[in-house]
Amino acid sequence: MLVTLKEILSDASRRKYAVGMFDVSDLEMVRAVTEEAEALRAPVILAALCPDVEGARLAYWYALARLAAEKSPTPVCIHLDHANTLDQVKRAADIGFTSVMLDASASPYEENIRRSREVVEAVRARNISVEAELGHVGNGLVGSGESGESADDRLTEPDKVAEFVERTGVDALAVSIGTAHGIYVKAPKLDIPRLDRITAASDIPLVLHGGSGTPEDQLASAIAHGICKVNIFSELIVAWNTTLRDELAQVPHMAAWPAVLRQKPDAAMREVIRRKIRFFGSADRC
Image (cartoon, rainbow, N blue to C red; front, side, top):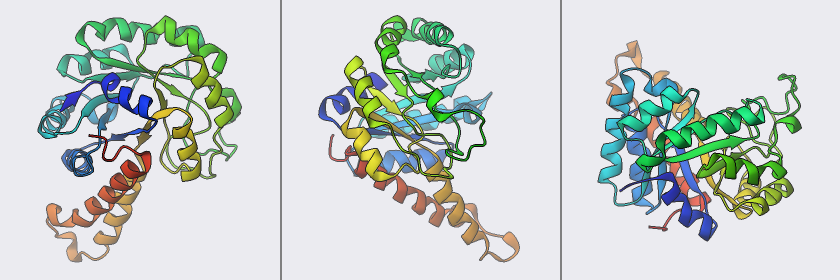
């Protein structure tokens, strides 16, 4: 069942659970997410990262995602994750995505508002949901001191949330409370009091980027305090790549049929998906 992000998050926000958003790159990842969600009777979000849908790739990726969504009896949202330009957003909207995100979070505040509002105005008439980000969730290496930027400088300012939501008209807001994308070199510490102030400022559904590797106790607390969408990618590919490496080490002459070679990597990835869906509290919601 193909739905919008706004539709899929409304129940999660009301009933205090989170929906998993999984970035997926190919047929087997699309199948893994939708089939495991169906088995667990859970809503789910299939997301495309721009490198996976550049040029002619977009039509192939979308055809796979659309087929999976339409076959599923449970709600599935097709989402564009971290677009860099309005043109990327428009291409996704034109082909049929039900949700888009243009990430202008690294831009100055007023520019973030302007660019996010442009997206809303471009897709509103098509019943496409829009996610934006306030504060900036950076890339990995949290706590390493290598970025040259204080983590506190990137966190969402609660007193700007209400104005940002009102002026942009977005349907969901990604917030920065201590997570990062990619692989952590040091476990993050989420700022739950800050999240409480954000939640108090607006009733908009809140999104946590950088969910992979975040300690479960902190993730559970974030969901209990208002997060209703959690993004996962790195844990999927680490499970898949690690298992594939082990499988390749046992293959003589590298002459293995791909469908056989990827059975164990796919199983490892599916286990991550099942574990996340159950942990987020979204199982048995459909």
